[in-house]
Amino acid sequence: MKEDTLIEVQGLQKVYSGKRSLFTPSKKVTAVKDVSFSIRKGETFGLIGESGSGKTTVGRMILRLIEPTNGSIIYNGQSLRDLSNKEMTSLRKEIQIVFQDSGSAFNPRKTIGAQIAHPLKKFGENQDPQFIHQQVLKMLEVVGLRADFFHRYPHELSGGQRQRAGIARALILKPKFLVLDEPVAALDVSVKAQIINLLIDLQKEFQLTYLFIAHNLDLVAYFCNRVAVLSKGEVIETSSTIDLFNNPKHEMTKKLLSSILTLEGDLGEVYKKRSVI
Ligand SMILES: Nc1ncnc2c1ncn2[C@@H]1O[C@H](COP(=O)(O)OP(=O)(O)OP(=O)(O)O)[C@@H](O)[C@H]1O
Image (tube, rainbow, N blue to C red; front, side, top):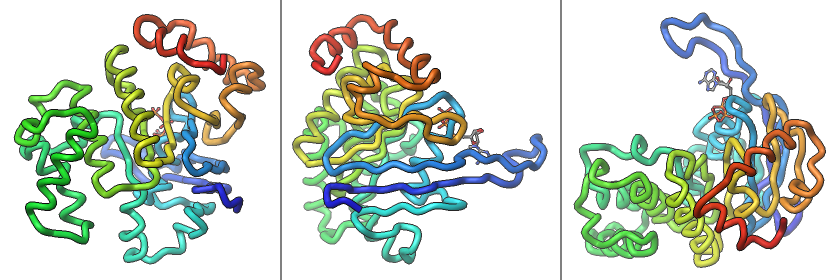
């Protein structure tokens, strides 16, 4: 493993077995066949592919929310699959996730403040209530939400505000690595740009490394340093963003690239600022 690598995934595979619901017959699904990539410290690595290509499964295996069937995940020199539950719990502070829909990831009956505080209460060393309260207020400010959002409930927030709160919750334990699972897919175009710009600022401020999962390339050009394209559970192309845009090798990549031509409004402005294409 190179010194500047934070995470290396090798030969990752996931076969789901059994029923997903009462009404579907039991059958094995190979969601991830063979996925390998490595992510350098401080970069944003894009994992792109059509719906059902296995992106979310890969992201969740890295967090060990889903157990891989095969393969290895090396984080900072440690094999995550060989860690005990206790060791994994302490590492979990360093690896966090932001979901596509923070709305459903929040408990509708608890305030935003209480939910941002939750990881600190569960994993934090300092359990002083005053300290935790201060940390939450600081985090709200960092993500651009006023202090009075502490007492609000999830349904009182807009989609963009909820996503900011989801980012605050993911950052409260001061992680090093964030899995961003389609974090802006459900947002309006102008709000997408705001959240992506926030993530870029936070990456600089907190020296974060990102795995950015998306089903198309519309933000990759602006946001990612390197990209892996996933199709049917396999990586079909990995390259720097510049090479991917200038010299796509795979038909699927070309197809995904054509989607960015439809960009308009604020996101179009975001692209004009970009220097690589
Ligand atoms: N718990 C499960 N049991 C059985 N099959 C599953 C399960 N979760 C996902 N799958 C299947 O595995 C494949 C990959 O799913 P996954 O959600 O990882 O893809 P994805 O690329 O993230 O898709 P999307 O962009 O739609 O979220 C799909 O065929 C999906 O139906």
